[in-house]
Amino acid sequence: MNLTELNRIATAMVAPGKGILAADESSGTIKKRFDAIGVESTEENRRDYREMLFRSKDAMSQYISGVILYDETIWQDAKDGTPLVKLIEQSGAIPGIKVDEGTQALPMCPGELVTVGLDKLAERLKKYYERGARFAKWRAVIDIGGGIPSMTAISVNAHALARYAALCQAAQIVPIVEPEVLMDGDHDIERCYEVTSRVLSKTFQELRVQRVALEGMVLKPNMAISGKKCAKQAPVEEVAEKTIRLLKACVPAAVPGIAFLSGGQSDEEATAHLNAMHKLGPLPWGLTFSYGRALQAAPQKAWSGKAENVAAGQRAFSHRAQMNGLASKGEWQSSLEKKAA
Ligand code: 13P
Image (tube, rainbow, N blue to C red; front, side, top):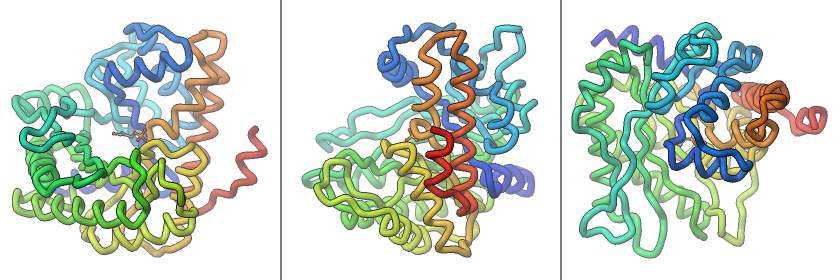
């Protein structure tokens, strides 16, 4: 393992003004997104859609540090035969790959999930590296509800995340460690804070036990935020203040960067929250976005599967990428949104 190189890549992934495009929706998830815009989820449509994003020159070169791909996409070529990985590299961004194989029910723990995909992971990482991937992602899912999460679910998911991270570093790939506490329930921000704190603490404990080099990884957490169905929604400043307090308590300064998931926040909320956190600096790590939905909802709608809408889709993507790029430096203002509308 060359830790200097892993650290260089991890640092580039969270460079100020830039963040990560999570375009690694599984076939099931992208079908849901395409259903919402009335587009059939064929291999060709998925390729055309993602090619549109990766060819958005302004967004990719100025605001996107890396792209997380799904297995299908990393092996796909653009319409003109150029591998999609090459398009990403040519824009100056780093290709990455989602390597977990989704979730399964966790035995003895009703309603809870464990992420799978460790079998043969070492072999798969080698092939992904040869194809150009320099970082990877593994997402654990923790739900909040009556009596959950259990310590069992937190513990087995943290263990798997650390196993994955160690295998990545041995393969000279930067692991994005993503323990996502879902925002789907009716819990308040305090409960989210408390659960996320337990999850992050356990995750870093496992990372240490399994000898993962913190200098060569990126953390992808949820924010401390009210559940979507909670009657009392915490305002932007409270989300920012609590999230930074939580991360300072749980994430060692040796970690080069933190890149948030959007998790179902609206586009503008996700941007406003990241921006507000940067007003609370200086921070010990790079802090940016690794958004899926909050970067892609607008371009998906603008594109709607029609070749004549590619330019509009790229404009919508560039706008969101720029807004989040500004937020990653604390330079975003809501008035910039209205100007583009
Ligand atoms: P969202 O930003 O849509 O939550 O997706 C990010 C991601 O990569 C989840 O694993």
